[in-house]
Length: 343
Image (cartoon, rainbow, N blue to C red; front, side):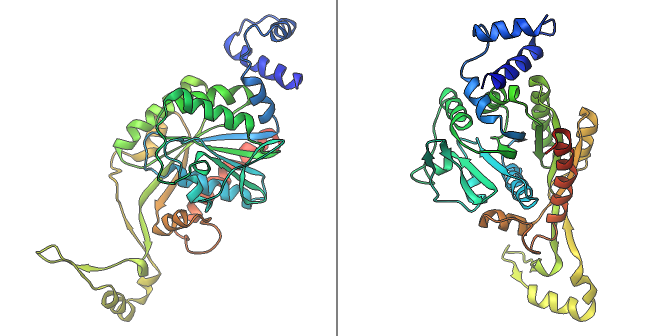
């Protein structure tokens, strides 16, 4: 344990005191508990078997951050990695539903709290498992939220993990500061920031990127989610408008008409820009702020349905519009993370 603690101490001190004269002095300060926060020691020990830690952030809510966290975890598990998904969105825990784990409970062993497992190599921890009623509101002040996050990090027994994905709440609040303070000394690979293309979302994402830079967290990249509504044409509903506002569904007629006169169109994908991206979207913002752009994921109703049903979008062909985009982002990102630390 002391080797782990000493490593943590050295990292903390070297980050904050570049003039630090010698390792011997570091050891002396460590043994005297002069500056190392005692509550970080058990967290450092618990996190030691976790090779990679990735935060998933967003500037505002409703941009698909938790959906991305869930599908990232599904994808990593499908690649035969040992994966943990930690939900620290204390007031809005949606991960249990998105992993198909609603109604599950946390169990405790002599090693600590046991995650709830989707598969043998994919464990999940969330406050959602602790609520007696899924409609129960969590009305907590910052210190209590921070206390639970520390307890998750200190008491949950993950075992050896290749990846720990941390789904954070939107914005830059107490939870973000707490998770960074607790994990930074043990090594955070970085953060993935999820946004939508419109300026009202990008304004907040800029703040999120600024937060990461200020606290020393590497921005692994930005994902532009809901980048245009994309649907196979047979899945599109056709409505005949009226002056009264009561539209008539003519989908059956329209598809029959297309099938008879232009059947090749039925193999096409209908695309519509939902959010205004005339300002350049996430790509332009990334170029301006000097952070990587990971790619675009279309707004796919089938992906939304997979999230609602708590299943992977990669397990069948239903999400064939969005799954390739997600797969490309993840496969381009993960080998870089794994290669750096030999996972």
